[in-house]
Length: 602
Ligand code: GLN
Image (cartoon, rainbow, N blue to C red; front, side):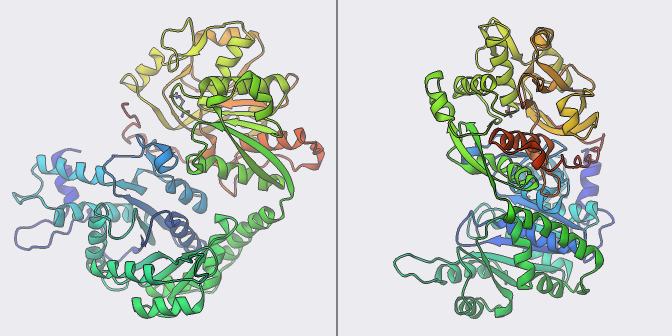
């Protein structure tokens, strides 16, 4: 951005007034409404699930909704975060690496999001500092208020404008009382004033404890923490109480009295068997009507479109509840102790299982001590295996051992990203006879670098050592299993996050030994899907992409459906008892060709 653009972006600035109200050009206050969701008491309450469920029920009413997650940390994006600490790194089609909640929004809303839907303190501060250097603040001292808060407000308004949103859903990361998110809270407080009465709805998510020793629900931590929100100048309009079981009326009344919120606007949001049940739960409690009323949006009776959206959603839930046939999928990894690290894979398996009428049970297998001697025992009872994405040396040999085991025994296999690279190494070593085959990520100077960072890749990305990120097109070989799984489509689009790839020098050798590279980049020699012919193995497929990121309840991802179907057959279910492949997912919109390229230097 040049300094002129920066100044234009700052909108109304003046020395005559203390008000600093940055607005994008053409923005009309009050045209879009805002719902802000805060977390109190503790993190991990499922703010993203709550906020996206609320957004979904308004979307079902025909409103255009646009979510945004505000993250307090100083990283510019989530790319450098450890999945063990923060859950998986989600990647959007435009290549931004973001919080896993963005995955929840995409799945709930069946909507592709972009970098406009995610902001971190790192981005906010960088932008303020760049503007300061460009002289954009009219000689004033740059302060948390109004300049940093101004940048937050600008982001929210830009999103509202770009999405032409009826309602923007703002999820504030962290918990009220944290230092990190205090300025986000201040920004939305100011903005609720600037946008005018009736254009903001504040929702506080809180937690009701039920200590075993007492055996009853206690509301004191919730009450005290809601006061912190009051101290920040915010009076919530709606309170949603998280708890393991439905929150009693008595407790809701207490919270209502102490927080000065009508009891009818204090809702129970208790645990349920699937996150996809939450929208109906909220609708059943009347939270959609409360939000519409508070925002002055006329409540229309359910329209045909709303009825159709609910019916389609409920069909998924009915299938999920009725799914009987148990099937066990083993996930082989390094972060097996924290399930959030694999959130999208778990979701994708649920979508595929539900589509096929199966209950997918997961078995977590730590690869660090998996050897030829232990593989048989560790993988016993597993009907299908996933080696998911990963980085580095630890556990890699164990994963290769596991891949050999499933390839030789005909156990269904889906390799994801690293899981594809390790499948190539395994095949090169044990089928093509290249004993020293490896990835240069694992053994820099190996004799056969079948996986490598290629000069071609360095040229494409501009700088060496960058990740290839975001949606990329893929051409599928007609007649291949991959092409069949995608309903005969010859061009598809999936999301990527990798630095290494199959070394094309070794492709002819591996093909001579029976491996097929059935998905390739349309422009570059990048192998994107591999498979073994059905005559050799019932289901051995791997992809350089992350198909789990684009799986949605309404569009089970074909590669996962293929795996679960093969696993069911492996478990003894007759193939003709299973439904045919689902319609392929719709192709995501092409990203803006002028957008900044998605690369990150590591
Ligand atoms: N470590 C591998 C690479 O960088 C695989 C990455 C991944 O699995 N996401 O290419």
